[in-house]
Amino acid sequence: MSGVSGMPKKPVIALLGGGQLGRMFLENALRYDVGVHLLDPDPDCSCAHLASRFVQGSFDDRDTVLRFAKDADVVGIEIEHVSVEALAELKAQGKTVIPDPDVLRTIKDKGLQKQFYREHGIPTADFALITDKSEIAAHASLLPAYLKSRTGGYDGKGVMALNDLSDADAAFDGPCVIERKADIALELAVLVVRSAIGTTVVYDPVEMVFDPRFNLVDHLRAPARIPPNTARDAQILARRVADAFNAPGLYAVEMFLTKQGELWVNETAPRAHNSGHHTIEACASSQFDQLLRLYMGWPLGDASLHSKAAMINLVGEGGTGPMAVKGLDDVLHVPGTFLHLYGKRETRTGRKMGHVTVVAATDAELDQATAVTKVHCKVVPALERAATDNQ
Image (cartoon, rainbow, N blue to C red; front, top):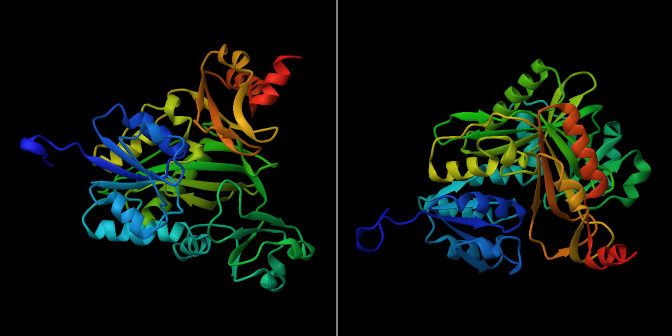
């Protein structure tokens, strides 16, 4: 690539989406001489001010995306709900597009994703596809189950439990997946990075604990507390998923470890993922660094853990308003703690506002630091913080 007067042209990455994943990607990319252009409908999104160029616009509108990315060398995403048609056209123009549009088209539809696992012999929970909730009764043999919207869901949205047929009346409507409820011992996630030439690096499995209030990850720990052979099998299964998609990318493969010792793939995200945030402090090359390496065609980084780690999500509590963080002094004095706030101006109950990563040499130290963080560190509306401080 060359620019004015024969000088090398700085490579440009066009990123669709400006939330916290984009923010953490940019924080890493700023260490390199690359330009990152950002498209998001919110002018106050988490990383608008960090990008080399920010454009306000819809990332799921084909023409908007094509105009935005016309001068870019690489096109990436931080959210699945983008125009796949635009990505396919940009790929046809010769640009590097990660994830591949065909991969994204499959993954963003949970029905197509489940069928993909079945077709490739990848173990997953039994399921059925329905067009609306009137068809739930025809699949009563799958109950108890989870009902998942085929498109549009995120962060626990678009998922509900179906314990018996009486729950069907309150079910959301439209095309859905009914998935038999797994008998889960642990929920795991494994990140796989696959290059354009098919080489892969695989991170250690992480153990995820969910907050039942919001159906979000409450915290995770790495490595997962599972036998070595189970960890190895989880990595092999995650690599199988990435190889089946047969395209360069970062794949976050969520799994169920059943009480019978089986590993089932739940879902895959073709992007940076909440289950990989700990890699910023706990690994030589974080998931965001790996993503940049993929975009630029650079060698993949070292994914090995150099310490035990935990990541605790900071989720808004107490209503809506300008955000404030309680308990920072109690948390940051603990060795090995790192605060990440996502730059969101307004907090609301259940909204991801940041996270705390803890690194430690022993499980006991990790347990203690995680407990302190969960008890003391809260994101609340600023008015609530002020009222508490004045008591």
